Amino acid sequence: MDGYSGALKRLLEENNVRAGDVIKVITEEREYVGTVIPRYEYASQDFLTLKLLNGYNIGIRFDKILSIKLIEKHSPPSFKSTLLEFKSKNLPHAVIVSTGGTIASRVDYRTGGVRPALSASDLLSVVPELADIAKVDAEVLFSIYSENMTPSHWTVLARKVHDYVSKGYEGVVVTHGTDTMGYTAAALSFALKHTPIPIVLVGSQRSSDRPSSDASSNLISAMHTSIEAPFSGVYVLMHGWVSDERMEVHLGTKVRKLHTSRRDAFKSVNSKPAAIYENGRLHVILDDLPKRRPPSSFDIFPNFDERVALIKFYPNMDPEIFSYLHGKGCRGIVLEGFGLGHVSSRAIPVLKKIVRDGVFVFMTSQCIFGRVRLTVYDTGRDLLEAGVIPLEDMLPETAFVKLSWCLGNFGEDKVLDVMKANIAYEYSSRTILEEGECFGK
Image (cartoon, rainbow, N blue to C red; front, side, top):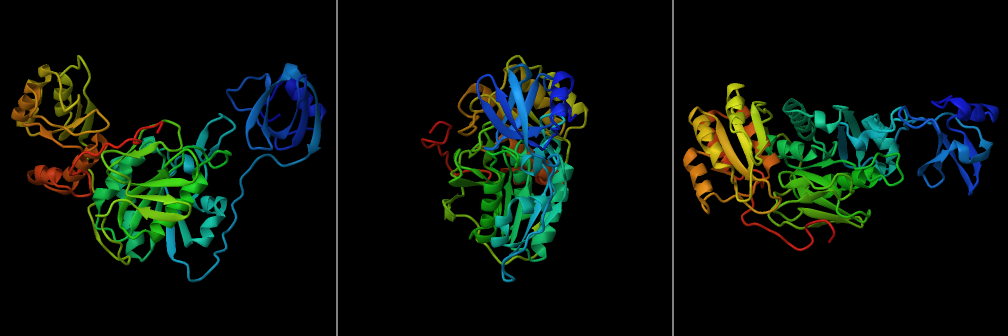
């Protein structure tokens, strides 16, 4: 009986109640009206789960139930997509490329978690407002959790986006899981050189069937931005605050997920947001962004070398970790050092040796804001002498992606020059730290 057993199962059977039915539950304290939800695999056998009329789920202890009454019979919960009818033949042509993640997920009542379950076309039917914005095509490129994204996925995605823009699509939105969306945004920022339109990555912190979901508002705002923005390049759009009024558009190389669950988890680091989408209007913040051009073919450098490591240095870290990586064929290492870019002095001889053996080693900082500076203290100067290259205020994740991209597309003799060049706004000319950049403001 939909996952229920024992006395609770018998109570439901006696009242001809199945999952999807609307019932009234009378307890010792109060009455509840809602839809019966299947018991998920790891839930207690002692609770009946109801989805209330406000959209939230509650669990009611069996020993508190005085009676239940069937109000309406319904089929078990399921999702049916519907075909969008676009309002005008003159709408711009856009595409949603789906890679999975929470924005393309629904609750799995077997486990109680969320899983990649919606296709890209399903997303369109969940958000019918898209039919007012553009004539939207959709493609499921991947259906995976973002923690499973690899450099090979970045290559496939970059080529797919390049194909759509080269064919004349005026808007491209990529739906992506939030955990590694910053990595993918950086990858596309480097791989797609001089893209003529804005490519907008968008995700959701809460799945589309939850009442507090940000999926719909994020997707609508991302489509507006990709179609209407006067700039080009690769960006991430997510909530700018916990409410739905303001979305922030972040440079693909300057954005980081800073909270596990808040809807405004993404913030620009060492940079202002590129733009704000608020109350249906786009407000450009950065004034030196590349201009939008008519969609057409453009250069693409889609390859990534997987023999790159991102290492966070920690107290008492064994320096032989670097020798191990070198022995495994690692061609480049990005270090997250302390503060201005420091590591234990014990590590410097090992780093010097692997640099001499041909491994590229770059330094970033574990700090969220600020920039690396290896000339202030003795340790930093020793690192410079050992051949470690500082990367100013580049985010560690962006540096990792850029090094993988450099090694995948250019000869080793060009890596240092390319890593030092400011290709996709990965470097800031000066460090920005304004009041309100952190949570709670």
